[in-house]
Length: 243
View 1 (tube, helix red, strand yellow):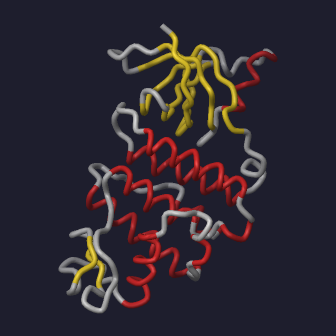
View 2 (view 1 turned 90 degrees about the horizontal axis):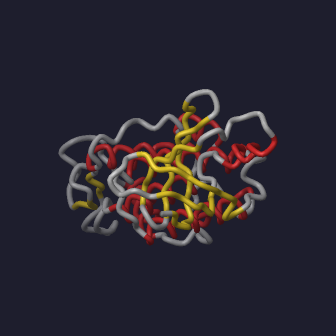
């Protein structure tokens, strides 16, 4: 039986001479692995392989068997056509980072409409936003995607809770027992980022490149403490270089 569903591609790997296996987060079935046969063939009708890249958004007709780990795509077409992302190294790098983070946060096949809608919102806004407003996008994505997945820093920065404890996952009244020890401006910025859920305002949080790099590492450290098997992110080095 076939189903129509939207999907967002996280990763594709080659399979055989002409096929691909793609990890796709679908609206109906959550995270699924799809075998797409013959898509890398040299024949003209298979040029659609160009649609399969990290965070491409698709409208798909799929075969779905709940008992199988590998599903099949019958047909796919663009759900959203990027206007800037392909030609812009910053937008493209942020999309790759978002895909890498998503793969580690979404580990089961249960659909989550909230997470799917957030991905769609983030990616379309990333594509359309002014070029100079993208610096905080990786932090925004990591914080909000993790929150939807069930991982968040609790509390707020106040005069009585001026520290961040990554192991406890909260703002605290005393320095963390295990480093890093986060306070002062870094703790205030973490609070500002932690409470912002609108991309239209994220650029208003002013952060220098060095501080942004530190904050990104802190949030990665937080996820490594709390998300099982959260591995190092390969895309972070690229983000540090361009942002």
